[in-house]
Amino acid sequence: MRLQESGEMYLETILILSRRNVSVHSVDVSEYMGFSKPSVSRAVRLLRSGGFLEMRPDGELLLTPLGRETAEKIYDRHQVLTAALMLLGVPEDIASVDACKIEHDISDVTLNAIKEHMKEPDRHDDP
Image (cartoon, rainbow, N blue to C red; front, side):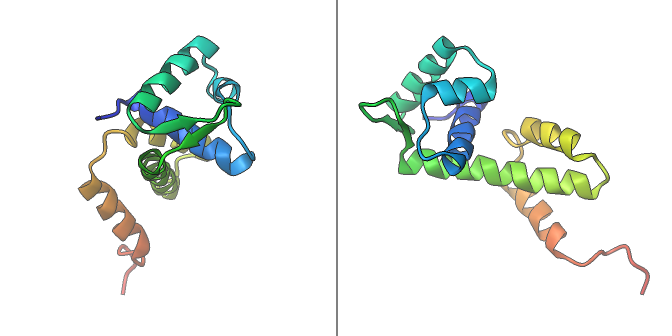
């Protein structure tokens, strides 16, 4: 199942919240993202049917291995792109918002090139 951008956003949010909290519930996702509870419930249902999420009887949301892999990939993209934009002088708050827009569409090839470029010493220094 190919996820749409919104599905990736939900998975990334659940990952972020799970790193902060012991457990994550739909209400936590709703509050974090500013979405209505019915919208979150619908997304959770779709993500569960796609094999990205499991829900415990108490309503706790758990990322499946596929869901965790997907969320980690999106989160990594967000972090790398935010850092790259900040290196260009973009303020952190704007860099984070822009990274969120880019992270869903950028190719692996381009992202890996950005990562490699960020590892290298500044190529623009005079010898």
